[in-house]
Image (cartoon, one colour):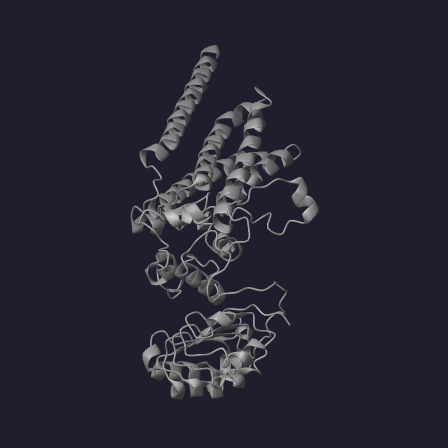
Length: 471
């Protein structure tokens, strides 16, 4: 009997020693992975990105199981069956955490992600996986009361590692200020947090360019994550560009990759911001375009053709009616004319956008008039570089919910601009590169709700350019 006990004890010792060896080898492999496949900011294959994009789908399973383990351990003090279940849950969590880590690394390595937050997220995942492996080996000693504190301490540390790693991942997805953006003033004063200090002052870049890039682009191209080695969270980094060179060419908006990417069709694989993030608005794109055209400096306080007055709160846009019943007619017309009516969002009440980019040269006043039946539902009309003339305002005046109107690069002279004075929702009007004069734009300059009026490269440019009007 004594011999059997000794044999059994020796077997347990051998198994425990084998487990420690396994953990040591696995930990070394996990820690060596970032050095073997360094995150260098370069993309390494579409198939890696394809697999890696399953990372967000899988990661919630191990997260939930890891959080469940301490709950089962505590509840198991009075219900032993729950403590038995904790061992199974812990092992399952590790079995899911390892492939989740692998998919996450494939995503970063394949897409060329790099940056402080990416590195922190990666090393946090390494620590978490090692912690779970330690918990599996240490738990039997805690259950048999051979040691009372090591397993709970390692489990607690693993949960903290989970929280910290999850925060880094959230920062990459939503931006580093996601949790603090709407923080109340008193609480903000008590809790320090990092923020960009690059764009101080009253320059045009600081007031109108940096805030857009910081809110729409920095989550992928900031200090935390610099995809393609591109950062836009500071002026110097923006002008330095990324692994493919400069993204802003001063004085040449048409040669600037940044502007090209944000103006692609949303379905284009190169469209930015990527992966369903909020795209730049017409006003934001126009500000960036004119800033680049004017030299893309960090210090200039104004841009020719663009002027912003004091800010004021704008009323929420009025909802349009439900156009669902008109969808067959909309699709039939789009097939014939080539121009598109695109929903602004999944909510029908948010309205439609009229896009003519694919047929701009052949789209004139007659084609526009055929969209009058859908006028109450159109909130933005993209007519830039089309063949429309001043006669188009007879149709446009019926677009009662119109908020943004692009007419840049057209033959508009402004002779009929007075006809759109009744558009009470119009906030944005771009007349750059047209034949409007200072006299012809007087009617729209008096529209109190109009916040952005772009007049770059027109005879009216010196008369106030783009104005953000106040009542």
